[in-house]
Length: 459
Image 1 (tube, rainbow, N blue to C red):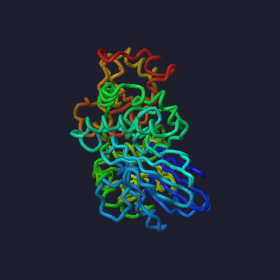
Image 2: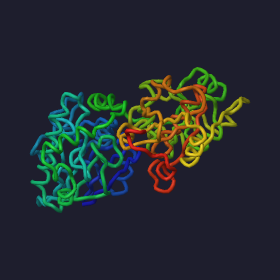
Image 3: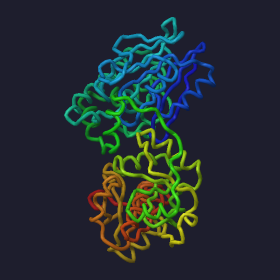
Image 4: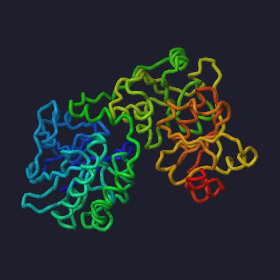
């Protein structure tokens, strides 16, 4: 059997194609199914079965469209209510495709009806387990996505689900999770790129801690839920529309100027340093070349708001379009292609300075009243920050701009990515941002190296 991994780094997720003897099974496919179809063609395999481990909360599935496109069976956990025909996958069921067998294990925790799929050959020998949002590499899926009233019960269930996997499967069974590679569906950060059930026995909190310790620590560590998650579960239960990867309508400089003047969401996809050096007034910077692009567009842009992209090339816009449809941002208001100078329509560009933590330290030494904004999450801030800095997580910033004084504002985050978004939001309001472009925790160039890091009580 061949197990191929299909990475979706922008969301921190993986899908899988399992093939043998000209047949294939697909587990948890993303919405842009052309990647799956191309891989199946490369393997010379017909997709006979598409299986979901759960109704996903962080992306719209491509499973329904894929199954319909290739005439495959479509398996979804039996307990979930969906608006389309499917094969209800219940505990103990065995789904077949050629010589491959998938045994369904009910592993609730990430959701109530979550299942894992144990892959075996025709003789019954276990080959792998696909664990979705249950057993991850050194962690588990988060348990608070279906409502706070269910979190405690689901966290206990998650503990027992991971222990069931460890008890019932051979120690050498390779583990293939859907989440855990930067996904916000992971309860805590994961580690490693591959693992087995036996290896997890030594590192997974659900297997190394007692139940109450596991529950208490997991719940205490749960952070903010990305805003777009609220739309994914209902969309997956209803059945996502077929994916549309066509180019959005092109917008000329005059129309673009009108949208910027109206305060619409116009996103410049260039690097943070290129944007800082010169950009259209009112544009916002969400750098495409970083894995976090779709996360923060989905988190900050109000759902359904008109969204226009500015790309240096047609391919850059097409790449952004692909990322966005994965979370259901389908109807773009348009796109403009070219450099800021080409799109400016004789208007002056705006810019702001870029510095680093050493530069921030030098300015703070001369001006102790300097306004410094920390755009990191609460869990990051809990470990300390720059002395005297104002802490507003980037996902809260659009609603809290009035808390930031007018004038000069230095902005930092963990890497510079979120700080760039924040700086562009501040520039749009007339403030004068300075982007701190650097890794907060870098031992040589970060905040501590510059003498800026202080513990939470003093930050």
